[in-house]
Image (tube, rainbow, N blue to C red; front, side):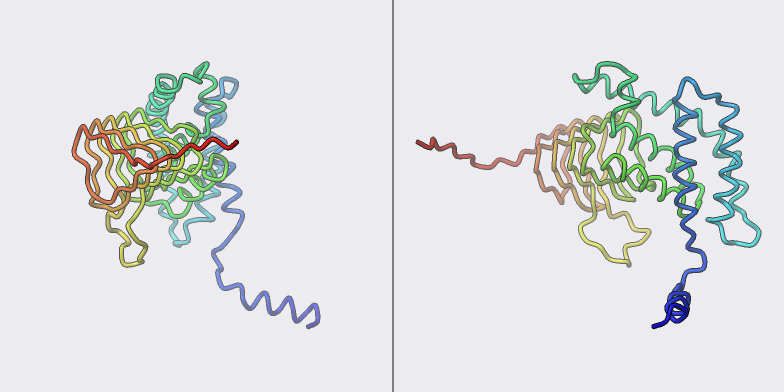
Length: 261
């Protein structure tokens, strides 16, 4: 094919007129601005809020394709949520200090813990998700997923004082519900029993009640599955049924140690 034919072929097959990669890049910039606004001690809050408003308007132009742009009315309502979000995130950070003996300072949690970063971007995206803003919340959490190794869908509902240790490989599905004072370790999945487009808008991910600890690589599946309050789920457990409160679930395997001469 000639150069002209190649270009014509590509242009003919570009079927998505609203797919603008600029939206992804601007969403990541917006996410970073939010994080600096809430946490960086050298950042002027008022100045950054002005920058956030401008960037948000640009995101609306890219993400909301309706002619009247009803999404533009969201900004003020979202701005009013930021103090509440910050309050929750400070409780999350305190949970890290309380739970992890390796945490040397609260500054270390904010700056160095991928689990905290994933929770922060989840909470910031979740409020936009609740407003019905298309695509942007998911791009925010996917940005955090790429940086932290933790995949939290913005539709999940997560209570206060949430602790994620090590972060890598954690998956929390769209309809998962996690209540207060929950601890989750690396590799945990809160997922669906199976994938089917017909399950859209159906609760298909588990509910985790207050004060539950879920250790590494445990898999908990199903929208009807409830992990009762004050329970502990051991590492590598596979759970597809509800667990009563105050339970201890373990997955034991025989380990043989043989001395090699």
